[in-house]
Length: 278
Image (cartoon, rainbow, N blue to C red; front, side, top):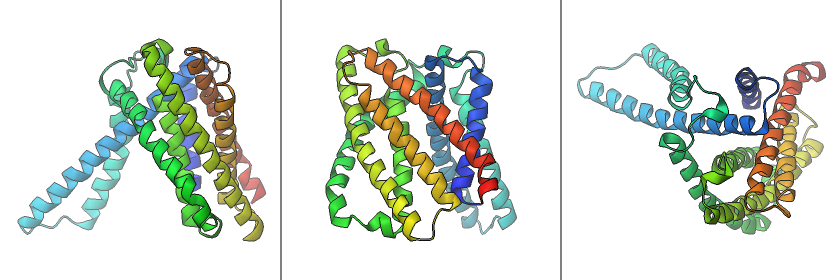
């Protein structure tokens, strides 16, 4: 089983959870709130992972000083149990099960930290993308020839999409007018550069498909994800035209809410259609 198939299964599980929480008649605002909480859960799980790895390293070091070696079987059980526990702990920490997605508190605690972090990360992300695009012509054929480089591109693009979602306020009134202006500029700039890299990555995977063995499960999966991301980024930029300082937030939320439907439909196709095609 390939990493992309694992990602597809995780995406479908996430979509099923969203359908259970939101129901069939959910609003754009509720779906976006669910997306924001999902980003927060991922970040929280990452923090727990860092703490767990540090704790495990210290524990192994302490026992090794005493000449006690933890068996390989025990280590595997601890690692498997720890990874299985991470999403449960993260979800329990972030999400209040007594409230709906739109009724969650996004104004303080971990939520405020995550939103602030995502907004601050827009600046270095913009700088890195700009520098990277400048260097693309010097190594233009790298993703066309090397699969690993292309994989890095696709992981980066998903990270950028998560960053853009996490940087947005759930309600436009949560941030001041001045912050909204600069936030809008940052989202548009990062989205524009990410769109260029997305098109570049899609061209590379299409080239590899045509010249290196034809369509495969992994390539079809990546082409679908890239096409969805390109469409969403294009819509994000297009819908900014002529919007005022508050309406643009609603428009971006609608784009990401639409994106959830596209991701789930593509995932459903991968789960049901691929066994018939390959």
